Image (cartoon, rainbow, N blue to C red; front, top):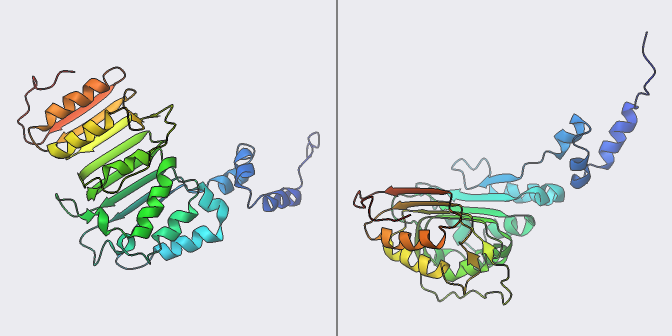
Length: 276
């Protein structure tokens, strides 16, 4: 005999509520703890990896169509990784050509907070930043103030002042990056109080002359990034002179630094070279 002490919620009414909330991602998330049905609908992917595939099975065009067809889905995307391998035919066309759909994609991701741009191709940085189309550079510049995490891999001639627009940055990775001249000036916000407090910082295979420019820049109070609250510092050093600038970097962040990882690729830095 069935126990009718507790009322049974009609399945039809439950289904009607779910259908009504189909485009209301925020409400679905609020109800996710009530029912697995709500949870499955609210669990929208917020991380996408974009890059041209050789077989063209998936493309940025298809991604844009997906984002345009579902504004709640586009709003839920927080992390975007743009990557390609140098072995692919014309691998950088998706970012260097003005008519590429990358700009269309970026304009749809209104909640983007983490961006990674990586180009494979060996030891030497593969992608010259000036080759990125002006349209795509402008769109990337627009989203920089809202990013909390930025990763750049295998890029050369990157304008250091562009990082001055990263007013919300918490995590920064520069891997095999060469800096360009400062001709591409970035406007710095007049009100930088409080400054963005960088916490994890990773510098991978950054030459000493590049590291010198970066350290002089980031330790200056004229720029909006504050490393006094740095809790994690990773450095993979490609040459012997890097430790001089690494010392200055560690001194500026010594108060809160909890994790320090150093790899000496040249095996020429003795344990006495760095004082922490």
